[in-house]
Image 1 (tube, rainbow, N blue to C red):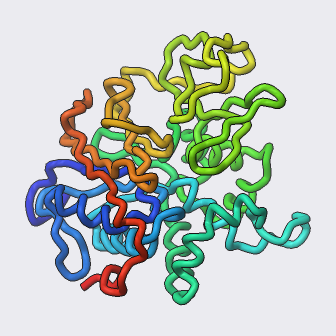
Image 2 (spheres, rainbow, N blue to C red):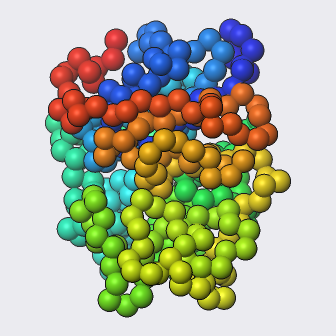
Image 3 (cartoon, rainbow, N blue to C red):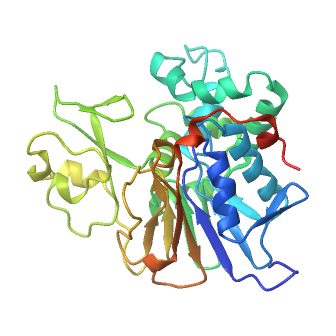
Length: 334
């Protein structure tokens, strides 16, 4: 509890992806004000849903704002797949693994992290400190009656994670194991930070608006009895042709998990939603509304309710000016 005043609740903020100026503006809109280089609220705290980095022009600012809030006890954070990607991309692989880095330096992976590395190029010590902080981020949170995970709450895998890592944080052995497909650590990391995906038929691909070609599609985890691909698809890109009517096979159904309406409120990011923020179910809120694609940077003001209310969304449209590289004063907080 905040000793200055009774804690009223949490403001959960979705994927920032380097939109640091908009993050500062959203915090101000939510009633947080900067004191001593830290955004603070007298009665509330923030929970960041991960994916602070990559793609946007103010990655350093986004990381500094969130880091300072977490260190000062004004915020919590869970790891997103982009923080995990940065950790594994920048760590040499142990000898005997048959590769140079934990995450391959492929053209696709190089492109994803390019903006982040460019912005930290002249600040190597700051980047090392950021990576060290990423390692401290838990993969999930349960506190005061809510749950938070970047992509998917799979209770079976979360129970397994807690047995291995009671603080839900990665140690070196778990991090290395998580980069090897087929291991339990890989499955836990993949499910919690990337969710479930369904492979497309051979020869079929989705050409996304972000320039990537994908041969699978993202699925959600709250349909009680899904029958078709259209019942579980959860991404802005439409499925090609009539694939939404394609029946789910038993094998495909077995890959999915289900988060029931009797579970505590859950907050996720990751899924690149578009339009006006809405609730997919009465107890789940997705807060990723494509901020870095000039969408919305979205928060949810949670004050203990067991059934969520769409009126509690707060957001800002990301302006085109966000694309301009920042001035030094925008990075070095007072």
